[in-house]
Image (cartoon, rainbow, N blue to C red; front, side):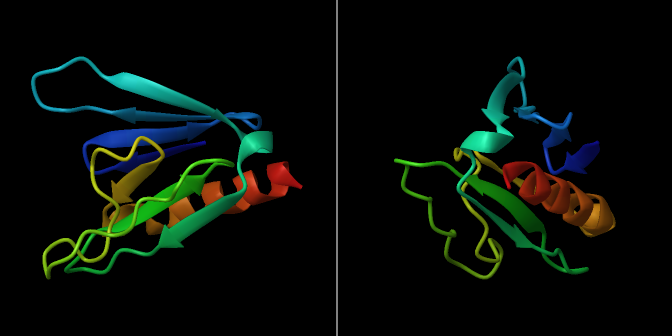
Length: 106
């Protein structure tokens, strides 16, 4: 199950979540998270004007808050390795991915 985000993708194979961000000019650096280690998920649907996001919370880590300002729309910063911004067209796929991760957690 894959979700195409803004400058990256999220993949879920039933056990592992892989977040691959593709910064401009650098090689992609994937982050792998085990679904059983996730303590929570945050999902905000994108609107036609603002991107949404998917964020995974891990034990012992502080969840980075949303960026301020009108254009950021409360999304976590790009530097947060456990989150990815999503465009409006990826809302349904992201919602299914979050539901699958929540089911695998329990």
